[in-house]
Amino acid sequence: MRRSDRYWAGLSSDLMIEQVLMRSVKTAGGLTRGRGMGESQRSQWLLSMPACADMNQAIQELTGVGYYTSDQHKEESIARQKRDREDIMSILTFMKERSPFTGDSSLRNIETGVTADSSVNVDNSKDVGTAIIESLVGQNVIDYTFKKKNQVITLNSKTSIKVDGELIQVDPQLLFQRCTTIANGLFEDISEIFKYELCSVPSSLFDNNGLPRQANKSILADSIWDFDGCGCLETGTNVHHVLDGGSLIHRIPWTKGNSFNSICQAYIDYVKSHYSEATIVFDGYPDVPTVKDITHIRRSKGCISPKINFSAEMPCKTKKDAFLSNEENKQRFINLLSAKFETSNYAVVHAFDDADLNIVQTAVSISEEQHVVVIGEDTDLLVLLCYHAMMHNKNVYFKSEPKQSIQKIRIWDIKKDKETFG
Image 1 (tube, one colour):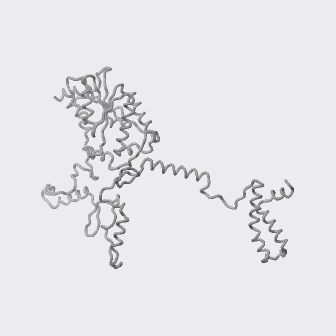
Image 2: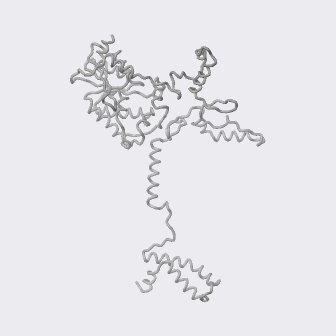
Image 3: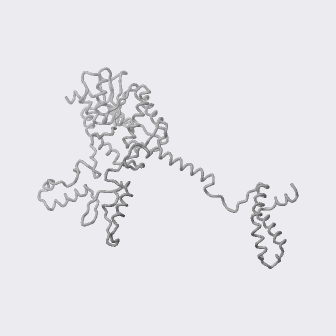
């Protein structure tokens, strides 16, 4: 490197430009202590800026030192690019699990899975707004009144009635309580008021949310146990287990982030470790209405989770209860789990809707040749077994296996119960 090159390389870019300008101005003359720049110096300074910029870039390339007068744009930083990529992947995963681009033409919220009824018209808001604008033509703006009936109806609309021009939300349970309270002072016989319909559903059978009250069937199971309790299996080694698939699904916890293949394998490992020979009977969740629809809604407490388009390799990123509260999700998972059980040489039975009767009929059929133990938590199974079990067949037992407390495990000898009850 020549001496002049080493000189320029040792200077900063700004200092180099300053030196060039100072020499240019001095060459033009007129720059003295105490005097400002004249028009000629100012013109030469402005006209020399492009040349100085080229020299500045050349010096930076020569010295390998970049000089920036300000920070780089935030979007170009490595941390911001990494975060943007994570956000994009989150959106893609969400859309893959809840894709709106399906054959389902219903109006629904892809996050919550709530499907709108026929009265919701928020998707036609443009047409509604156009109709309102057309109704304004030829009208006096001051005298025109917007009518609420012309508003679009959203998913969040609530039931209400108008009293003296004021909209009031209706709570059937509260209305029933107030009517009965007032009736105490108006009628000598309170039963007279019950001749009239005071609410949409009887409060003795339905909760405030309009869903049927849950029957406390466990009291019946406790009474049968207290009347004729059993506590041991007298079957030897030749025993076949019939599992309630619905109870089995809720017994195994899910680890968030595991693939659905891993979740299914956890069920298979559990069955292998607890039952040598087993048949699993699953409920069905068809698209048509069934007698269990209200029960399913009550169990989910009225909350409907979104439909998730998952595959066997996809990780589960939602809570188990929320995932299973959607009937389509549950049916698809049952189909996947059933295929895994069949691959592992387990017999699987699918019911059209409620599986209680299918479980009992499967157990009675197997009891013709083998002792049978029915595994479940539903008291309905105990009652149905007491009715359908055959006295001339092998022994049939009903075993309760709660998912938490092992102290509540009970075993009913169905043939002994039938003999006791007559």
